[in-house]
Length: 365
Image (cartoon, rainbow, N blue to C red; front, side):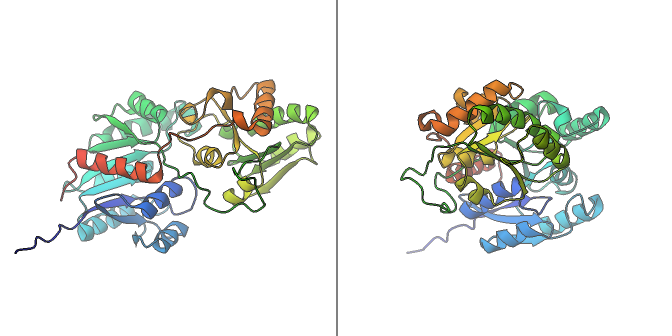
């Protein structure tokens, strides 16, 4: 009897132009941990924390001078070198810089895929000038002509891509998957269902204008007038810190509002009852997904992909302080009002759908 040797898995090269552990890194690490069925994953990143974490998961990583800090010439050379060595069937880029370098330098052999994590309906969220907006829109429209597949992390993201960039292919919507088990055990004893009631409010966001934290402070101030035991933590760093501290003082909330800087998200969630996020735009927020998956209350602005994650009871108009206060109260004190993720895709579901996109795009060696 002749035994047929199984064919080697096809290689997908994931190209990520940043190496910190914020933003897209969560998506990359979840995929590396789970794997994409039928595919061998290889990663290209610049030096830093992300490749270290990937290697800790057993992933194969090429660390090279790639990304905006290293310039277009070095980034293109690094990509060509890895493509030549790995001969991937698919090159999958993440974030705008990698998308453009891949379009210019990946060559004609591999199929090209991209995942959009950070487009907004309103251009000023990410670009402060109209000229830059127009240049980037033209660049994305042009580079998408080179791609075989495009993925968006929410329906709102896909709609914004179509509206702004006119991609030549249909955009596949693959939400960020999340598993319904806390990644770390809670720090303090919890009820059996993992939920507590209370008004310990948490924000996990960069202290920057698009996060609209002054509006959260206004809503919290109204909540605090009727619930003096309420507490707020604004975790994160950014250019608005001084202005936020001044607002806290002006509202007389120094004793009940903390700005601790960076915190461990899991530990912070275990110590709070409600996550609040009143951003101008979100695509598919991992913070919202993690909070909902662990039974926290959630209050978020009714924008972007947030309505795809949360029910109407958890969504507010950010500039309505009374509505924000009422939602914080309800989400903190009424367990039945809190969102759940019963039908939300897991990390494995997400990876299965990515594999299907690769196959549909013709990514075969």
